[in-house]
Length: 305
Image (cartoon, rainbow, N blue to C red; front, side):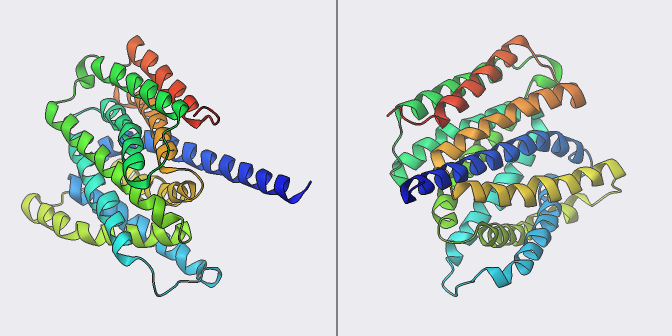
């Protein structure tokens, strides 16, 4: 193989590894909604976010410490952008998500977050000048239609989310889209463990006053072992590992394409919500899930421009 072929093979391998990382993140995200609903029975939204990211920050900073010899930390790190990523991706997104889940179902919340690809693709084209190819545009529209189909067919009982909860989840979707846009530029400039560790730490510190107010206002009651298990899952698996994998994927995928994979999470949550929380799962939701998968496939294709 000549040098050009070797480079192409390496690029293909990097792309595949990034896609695998992104799919793994979305599978974890899908079950995250179930864990949040369980934890919110005994812990308030900001306090839950703080507990979750204290664990995540400790893990990421430990990993950064182990890898420090292999990573050259420059003095000129973009601390402002890392801090902004932490504020948007941790301090804003996760409390909004938690607050929304107080009022709406896990299934419906995850499906509303399917609007992230549409928002991310539009913001990527606007701010990053990423080209919106025909296949990606069709994929975003198809997956968005699938999300709309599932949200409109909300089912009965636990499937009916309030307007307030849905609005909070939609606001969270916008926050994550902005995080993806900012993270795309930063993740290309430095190792993803650096981005994950420092942005998560910044967001965690900013959560402290809000969680402190919650504990002062409402108290911090006895917590069951089931809830602590949910918190540990959120901190170790759903935060530390996903932030690491997500920022890794952003180094090899365009932000608009990366955003589309977010639509895999709702499928996992809808199934998990039906199995573990008793939330409704209709034929219309299954059809919408199929549209989401089709959109992800179309958006990931290359060649149509």
